[in-house]
Image 1 (cartoon, rainbow, N blue to C red):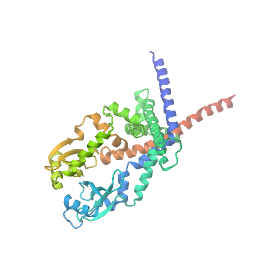
Image 2 (cartoon, rainbow, N blue to C red; image 1 turned 90 degrees about the vertical axis):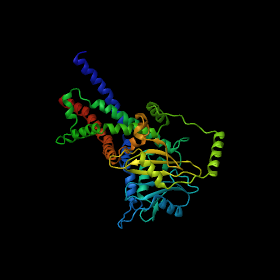
Image 3 (cartoon, one colour; image 1 turned 180 degrees about the vertical axis):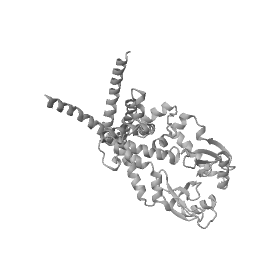
Image 4 (cartoon, rainbow, N blue to C red; image 1 turned 120 degrees about the vertical axis):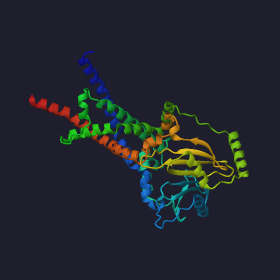
Length: 413
């Protein structure tokens, strides 16, 4: 094949991908603008909520008191908390409060209520049900990001389809188009000659606004392409069951859900009754934490799921602390009577495909390597928010060129 033929073939291929890139962007542009903007804010969801309710999360020890033991704090919690205590959270940060999670009778929420205690005085600081303007705001940001606020509309827009599902389908489809746009954009960007690569990586601020806009769209998208792809390819996971199943199958981690029958439920009921009959005394919580530290020898945050009556096992997860700390927790199952480690689920020891499959949410939100990855995702989300705008301006400018050529021809006749 001659150089001329190769050039023509590449030009046709590039035009094909350019057309896909253009229409994928135009069709999903407005939705993506909303999704990416809210996603940018939501990267720091936890930090914003905690900043607005800092009195719950932050404590000071100006008097230099020794911290109360987890058992002493749990005992104080039992006196003031109504309902069943499910878990406790102990931070490695001496200035963060001690947390107890509980669920009262009739509470249908997934997470229950979290109560915050000063670990130096035992004082109850408040609970997660208190009014929090930041939590309300972030709730709307999440609704806008996932469902375009359609979940706030009670009457169904289309009969037989929940508004929440409709919003999820729209954002999911737009995210698929976004991923296609990222991939086709990379193909379009690749220069024909290696000497032009450097130019494609620069933004010429000394040029006119059209060139600056073009460079901003191309160069910024290229720099953030990997993160944009990760955000895009994981987004529809939460919108479409077929997409979720396909992604899990491609990673080799798909498992069919088993449905419990009446006989199984009856058997489960008998097991629960037996557990109630034989209560096992718990050791001091510090014994379990000591045992965890022997296996997981690093500084981190503990979450202890308290065993129910008759349970012979206690579940404890530990999460590393630090700016570059991975978000995934390591999980241990301990014997209630002896604090012996019975099972260990160490994240870094898992096969690569299982680690990826277990990190879909973290990969989408940017909570992969602590504050470091969050910062990268925040910047990338800002870039993603700008792409529909800069891309539309490029398209409008290209549309104007043929008109100008026709006007010149008409003037020359």
